[in-house]
Image 1 (tube, rainbow, N blue to C red):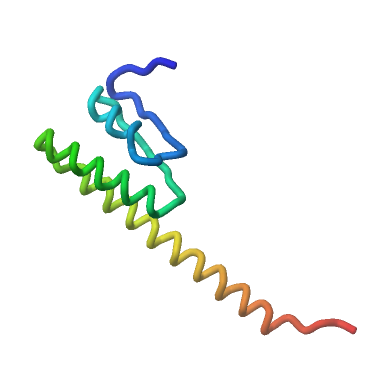
Image 2 (cartoon, one colour; image 1 turned 135 degrees about the horizontal axis):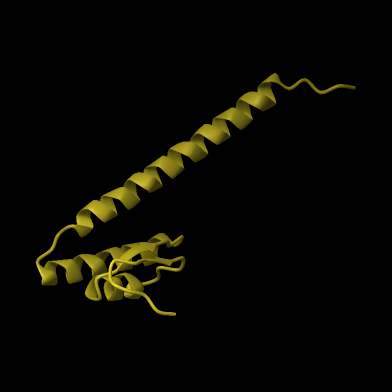
Length: 95
């Protein structure tokens, strides 16, 4: 597959962040998704180091957004769990 500068690349398996670093190097936008927090932390550190090397700290905005999304996801899961508990309390079994 080919891409051109300013294209957006999506990586569903972020891992250590290689795709994001390559995108930054070749002037592409990138969305990286990682389920495992340990891999996310490795990628985050690697991307930050690369951005510091470039003298560009915009990655903090990206990482903040990711952390906000994680907080929103946790909030959403809690809300769904609370709703499920409320439904269990109000549900009366029919015999």
